Amino acid sequence: MADHTFQLIAIIVYLAAMIGIGVYGYRKTSNLDDYMLGGRKLNATTSALSAGASDMSQWLLMGLPGAIYVSGLVEAWMGIGLLIGAWANWLLIAPRLRAYTQVANNSITIPSFFDNRFKNNSKVLRIVSGIIILLYFTFYVSSGLVAGGVFFESSFGYNYHTGLLIVASVTIAYTFIGGFLAVSVTDVVQGTMMFLALILIPIFGLFLTGGLGETANTIREVDPTLLSFFATATATGVISSLAWGLGYFGQPHIIIRFMAISSVKETKKARKIGIGWMFLSLLGAGATALVGVAYFQQNPDVTLTDPEAIFISLGQIIFHPFIAGIMLAAVIAAIMSTVSSQLLVTSSALVEDIYKAVFKTDASQKQLVNLSRIAVLAISFVAMIFAWQQNETILGLVSFAWAGFGAAFGPVIILALYWKKFTGAGALWGMIVGAVTVFVWGTSNLSSYLYEIVPGFLLCLIVGVVVSLMTYKPNQEINREFDETLDIVHHEK
Image (cartoon, rainbow, N blue to C red; front, side, top):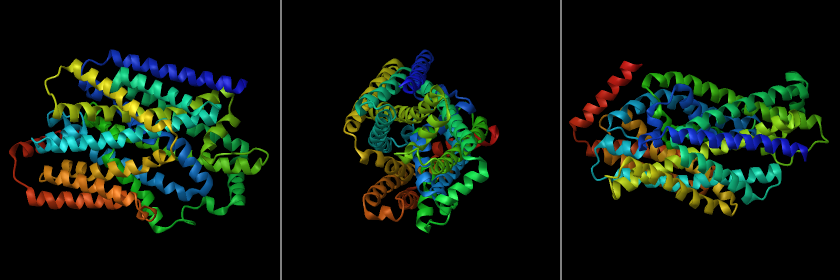
């Protein structure tokens, strides 16, 4: 009982700090650009850790260690794919997207960038991409809320709904109050907590399992294949795992960090910080799982009821209850960092891309900020309805949504930034084909053979190129903005 008290105190301190950061963000927010992009003033460290924390979610601390604990390093291929994808995203997308979104009428969302990039006066592309974001992210947010409810239920014996309400209330509060700046600053805190926890647990755990050599020998006693990347791997399985990296190019809640960084020059520094953080965090997650295998083999009287709780269990075994509470708070941090980013992007899609495009464009900045806050509440309410009845299919939708965004937006982003002759029609039809392919493939038996992002991404790319070649007409303004973007990127690099 005393242990739980210490752990709860640590979590309460953490949650209070998140609310405090929300108030700080509120004081720094005066217009819609501030609320949605932090005024494009983020430094390299904040951008890098914010992108990483928004990306990884509870998968890094629970999903990946749990999978490696059960199946071994063959499960690490997904992490390798994600690491390569994140590096390519920072290298290829970040500099050009930062410059182009400002050149193209100061676009503050991905759909508004599409609209401004292609000079699509019909607004169809903007509205369709806004709707895709709205639909997918509402379910994505609900999956995070489910994870929060399950966490409090499994860690403290709370009612599932009580845990869900705690995570939802705090996340909604600091997102509602402080907007993008609050979300980004809390992401830095959350990303640092996740990083330290994943490094410290395996290091201290090795002292319990007898060091590297003894730990490796114990793991081989359990199953020699656990230390192999290839022993139980299949070609399509490895391709599907690596293909997760393709999703990065189209994730709105991640690439919006590229738009918010202070300059193109800062993206190079941010790439080094972000990829360094991600590499060490993934390494820590894998090491946590393997140390856990050795520990529970050496201590058969101690049982692990849920493999996905290996990170939490080791933290409680190794550290004082208050420190273990901070480790638990890192899990909450992983959940909340992703949910808050998704809430903000979904809010921006509703207000900036659907409301402004369809209904009204002359609202004041204050009205737009207030509407965005109302949108955060509305989306949260709908997501909580989906999450109220604990449903495993919602959690399963995370990989489906990742594929959906990656296939619908990824090739469009790449072509928009690198091909001057890419057209609005090519973008629209590529986006639709990518999204539909993921839906059809992902809901059929084909998904058990090959991850749906692979055919979705390829078809979106092909359709985008073919339709653009059929519909291209020279446009001086598009050419000028494209060339101006290249000049900025080359000059600032």
